[in-house]
Amino acid sequence: MTGPERDDRPTRVGDSDARTPRAARDDRRGAPRDSRRDDRSAGGRGGDRPFGGSRGAARGGPDRRTGRAVRPGVDRPRWVAYEAIAAVNRDDAFANLVLPAMIRDEGLFGRDAAFATELTYGTLRHLGTLDAILTSAAGRDVERIDPPVRDALRLGAYQILHTRVPPHAAVSSTVDLVRAVGPGATGFANAVLREVAGQDADAWVAKLAPSMESDPIGHLALTYSHPQWVVRAFAEALGGDLGETTRLLIEDNERPPVHLCARPGLADPVELADEVGGAPGAFSPYAVYLSGGAPGDLAAVAEGRAHVQDEGSQLVAAALAAAPLDGPDGRWLDLCAGPGGKSGLLGALVAERGGRLTAVEVAEHRARLVAQATRNLPVTVLHADGRDVGREPKLPEEHFDRVLVDAPCTGLGSLRRRPESRWRRQPSDLPALTRLQRELLGSALRAVRPGGVVAYVTCSPHVVETHVTVTEAARRSGVPVDFVDARPLMPAGMPGLGDGPTVQLWPHRHGTDAMFLAVLRRT
Ligand SMILES: C[S@@+](CC[C@H](N)C(=O)[O-])C[C@H]1O[C@@H](n2cnc3c(N)ncnc32)[C@H](O)[C@@H]1O
Image (cartoon, rainbow, N blue to C red; front, side, top):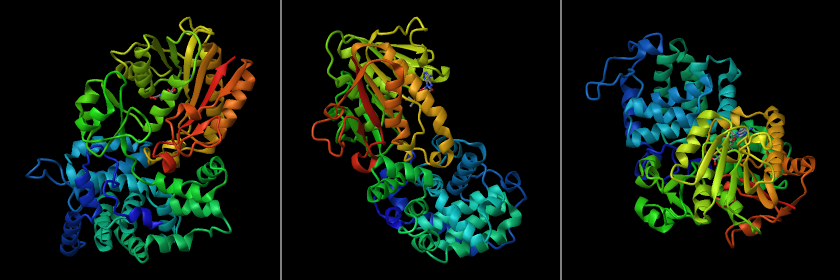
């Protein structure tokens, strides 16, 4: 288990756009600066420091250098990580939204920002396994520990088991943190973390996980920190191949690279790669891999020549544009457009053919994001329900040449990007989602003209959201359709596309999110 976590891949540290490869490398190499700071704190601080009884009371005066508030005894990267983890667990916040704001507010840069990011994302990804270990070490269910102390312990256990922060430094810094957020529990925290530090992550997993032979799903779930139902769904989508399922779970615990999409007609990917110091993508003709930095700061993104988009998302949108079509080809429809990533690419592609894209989004604020993402492109944004084809005058039946349904889904294919979502999603989410998916696909089949094509896409490989939805929606719609083999719509020579006619992309096979694509032609 620790192999993938403890490797020395230089850029796989955290998920902050603000981090640099150099910073990431420095932190991965054992966070020497933090270790020194922790050594100092471990040796120089007794239990008699004047901490207050609440987080507010623990805040000291302003730092003389930065003018920012400081918490005595808690260094700023760990404080930010703690606050982000607490916001996720307490307030249902999203780490990718709250963390960058906290890093900015706290004035963290470089290695400190990278360290806070690694701690936050790593702790959240490993939550399931960390909780099992803490339950064992504490001798009581982790759910019965006071939430602020529990989150601090998770952060401490992550450092002990998955980073090169020396265990004594991880323990002492966490005890300092507990002193600030749950002052009555410092002795408890100290004892629990010392117990955690008594063995490494592999030994804990060997002790706590069921054996692979007796309970393979339970074993993989605990070893690679995924809920069992998610492991089961992945294994089913991978045809029961548990070796491949394991590779997928490992990949899910890694930091995904940032991909740019060079908009066709507006940017050349090779030139864009030179401009941003990245590399052209392996598969999508529009992809550029960024090696670090903040994509939002790039001139190409600000000027609308490129946007941030997973390569798999580019491939499925481009596949819709590449599907063979007889007759007119100027009326395109994106039925689930927010926040506008695929509309951005489709808008640029339809512009090259002199056509127009209608981009539909039911959530008003997301419709505004689509409008922003597609400005200067021939795109009409419609704030409407995509199921209203035939009822909404701008969504007539049998009208569009190409239609995309990028359906709302569990998002199990992009767990790399949302560290908390694996714990938040539940199997009970599936019935409502799959019903919506069927209705939207049925609506798309009504919207497309005879001879036109519909692409059904999810960023989930769950077979209930992919094969079952497509088969059921096509059957119930009453619209005559044929499956188009989607594999030839992918770049030539792309490996691992399966037996068709649908395509399932995978992080561990293709380095993309696990996007599913089915292409249907109305006959
Ligand atoms: C998977 S996301 C689409 C991502 C988007 N295609 C992109 O590439 O940026 C699904 C979107 O469908 C929207 N949605 C959900 N129900 C809808 C409906 N009934 N009609 C239209 N849009 C809907 C959601 O608000 C969400 O923005």
